[in-house]
Length: 301
Image 1 (cartoon, rainbow, N blue to C red):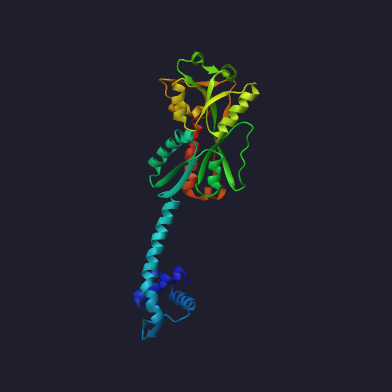
Image 2: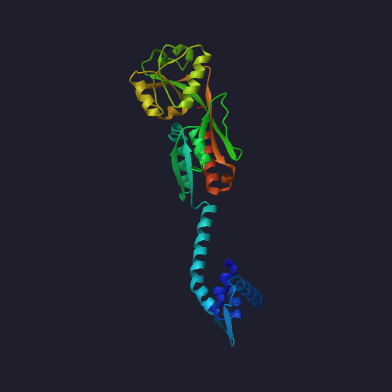
């Protein structure tokens, strides 16, 4: 109903008492002030002023609007300041959903950079495995999703979702520190065909079973868990070996668990996913760029 410019001019007229006085305060011409007040009165559907000599007296509608004008302008000012802070990266909130090994490695380093350079940006951290994490993005439950795919698996994402490649994460085998194959720098999956195995999330488990099938054996899976630290504890106790992403080497229990690369190398692709329109939001774009910069330092891990 109201144009904020007209409200500002109206407020100035009320304070100055005349159109010419308001024009001087605002740096307008008097005809410009007159035209704005006529436009405001058309919007209201009633006169706002009655001229008494050289002064302007408020009508009942004018008095009502005058009581609210300062609050309206104050709210607009606050809104402008808050929006400006967001667009200039002095504030903002971004919800990031990532899988556990990313939340334990890439994401904390990225958040530390953001906290140092843009302390007003607040990141809400969520955790989920793909494809569930991508479904959360589609439902609007997060702004950025970090997810992974394996060779031969193409992620199905809506057209409005942008994929930003981050890194290639080489798979490793975790085994007890005293395992005979722990003396090697790399191991072949076929050499572990008779071992008991600890399997991870459904997507990782599917890839693991596929890799074993390609080599002609079905692994003896003794335990399944999505928790990387639980996997390490089971391995440390000699309850099995596990095929895990290279990112876990950053928080490996080196005293009791050894991580050895697979040969030939098997890698999973890690990407960030975000709604294309959200990349126009400064804080979201900043978070994505920071995560990408951190991830690029880990290429080939």
